[in-house]
Image (cartoon, rainbow, N blue to C red; front, top):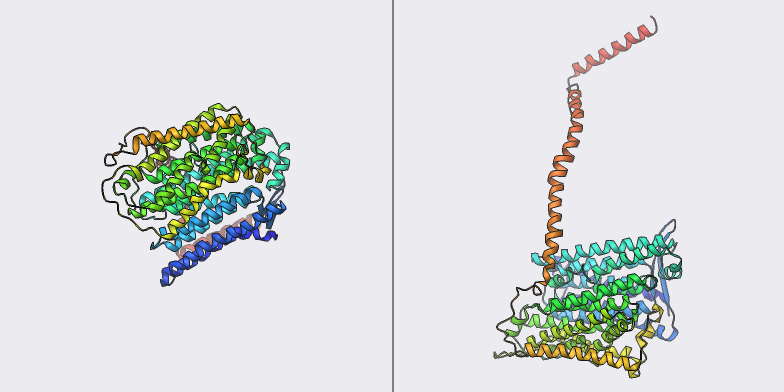
Length: 628
């Protein structure tokens, strides 16, 4: 295979973004570009990216070859050598496969969702750029190029979250996402710099880093690992840098689906897996990551149990599932964590897209109780939504069961029973709040006539395809206890990932316990919400309902304090101290300048007098000095 194809995985959506941008500006002036043109470019570019990725995947499956493509040397200063280089190994192609495929389905869905929107062309330009940035991130051959993609998805998230910028709340949400991620990104950048000094390597590509990791200063590696993970906290919404994610629901629903399923929030998990050689050498940092992931999963699940906004429930659900992924990669089970990234992409994209279909049908209503009160018949959305809810709850044989069970088993095998217990209880909460959502939306009694609402095929067809993935994706890593061959674990063997090795009896017990816990969550939700009075919704005045007042805490102790500090610097320190000091020091120069300025009066006779006086002084000096 020609390795020059690698860059075209990125260039396809990037060129799509450029073309759609050009056509959009032309359309503003001449009103001559149809939405069909934007749509063809918008879905054509991720389709090309997926087909190229698929061809590389099939080739690698046969030849087991790793490909690299170096376009040019970007920077070479002393020991620092950075190339614009891309890597197609089994990890990057695994990520690119589902990113481009799920991204393609979300692009198709967006055609129906955004139909008639005046910013249709701009939306697809941003959308294509978002996908291109994520593909740069996963295909990068060194941390610096990865950082370009890392910043790219951050920029696109800001542009898309605040897409409807005429609404102040949307702009605030976009700013919040941008600022919080800059905090994480600063840590990430410092982590790369620290890693460079720890290794002292001329070449920063991942192969070279992995080969020399054992020669590095361990203390610097620990610092680097922590700093890099701070970046992951921001991108993947882990405590405490998660506060942007629920507010990111301000943008159109296709954006939410793309952020949560195929881009951005999974970037942090991928980054830890890509630096597996680093985190395997600093297991104490890995354990910290696993514990933080466990507490994030639990914290987000608790909040989700009381939310009433359909998209925010799904947002906290994503945050919780990301916690599971970090539990796995933190403990060294990289393939298990990435397996959950893979299955999560299908059912979470489907859930968000289903939520979007409901929101459109009810004229952008997002409160689940009001949706239930205005309930309409959406059979395909209801069917696929149920599949997504079952999958995320971990019920066999749906995909979420296999990936989540592998994570819980990994924690149990490592003897991290606290993490395992938290994960198990979070599984109960997940089943509870997801079925709470389903029962309120589709089951709780409503005596009003439920009219049927037509849903565009650009919405329903992607949903049905994702439903197949939500059901069957788990079979790609079918466990050996059922006669499976762990295809994904085998495919990602380059990560030196830990594998689950326990007796079949232990595995059966853990699986049955996991299913029983999930079943208990479903039963609890059924008892409380299957016959719930949707016209008397829950009050929103408690601690959990208000998300533990974390946003208020940050606002009071960080935002407001920063404002007070800024006011002090501007009004006191800058104006009354620094400016006064400088002006006082310069007052003498100003006085001298004013006196000298008196000589510059534009009077020719006055100038002639001074010239005569000067010449006279010179003659007198010469006369006496020469003794004349």
